[in-house]
Length: 456
Image (tube, rainbow, N blue to C red; front, side, top):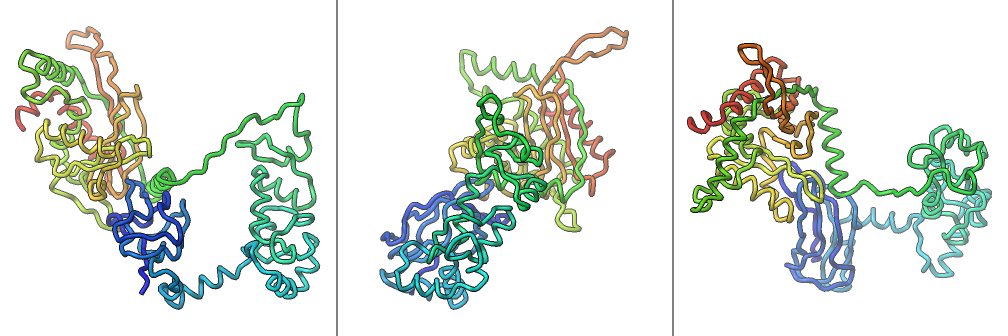
């Protein structure tokens, strides 16, 4: 019996994975441990083994496809075995329907071509697009995109225009605005490029020359498909904004004590005994993570998840730490951060960040956070609006350290370093005043970080 390879579930929150690339092709022999493809989620990349020894009978999904978990992606069995039978009756029927659709290959025999051409409907024969007419799917796609079928060469049996012919014609045509599409449907001519955003052809472009002074009006344009982890992140961010009432508060905390602590740690590490205490690599972000882990338990409504109509608050603090990687944003989790020392938090944050960068991070290390911290301070950002890492109800943005005027008791003005914070909450379950109290408490902890460490 052939083995049906399904898209595995990479963590409880993952609903689909994108096939990054296939490592094998149909008819290749594989062992159970052979990596047949590489898939990615919005969090990490994973190798998928064959799961059984045999021959790759059929690859069901192409590279770049976003495939729901537990859906079949390939069939592996003995050479010559019927792969459709392994999928079951319904799947076999669907595959047969797809195989018989208008994506007929060029290898159709002459006898098959004659049979198909004879079966073309009267409507198809009247279609001026080609001698063989056009398929229903081709006509539907052409109608949606305002592409005239007249004169379009067909690659189907008997010269029939099929869907892929329309798709091929659309590849070389610039995008259209709705008004321009309507005008084209009425018979207007389309220029090679439009003056709209991204080269989009607008209604005004249909009445102007395509070039000025012999040069293209649009200039060079690079089009990059949004796919892979970037596409998944885009979907999650949009869903987060659509499903929650996000509200951001901004505040600043005196940073002199934190900077002094950091200075002493660096000096200790560079002393004659070296970094005996293991504190030389502790960063400002590590100190902020430590402070958050100690303040959050006093505000349990901030250390929570909104799931449906329920609010789940947590006793332990599982800190999500946003990490910028070449593949996109990842959020590994420091579990039980409220139980860890500053040095332990620093070490774990660095370990997880490195794993995200080199692709070795595990799926379980990228889920289960109850509160997230994201830091743009190193880029000189003085304030921003973090987007919630749903279903969390709060996320803290860490901004840069800047000099701000401070008035003392005698009215004298001086400048002191302050670190900025941007706190986004889900206003559905967290009100502004309680969130402001949390932010004030955090700023106080940062201002007196030495006392916080002494009491830990």
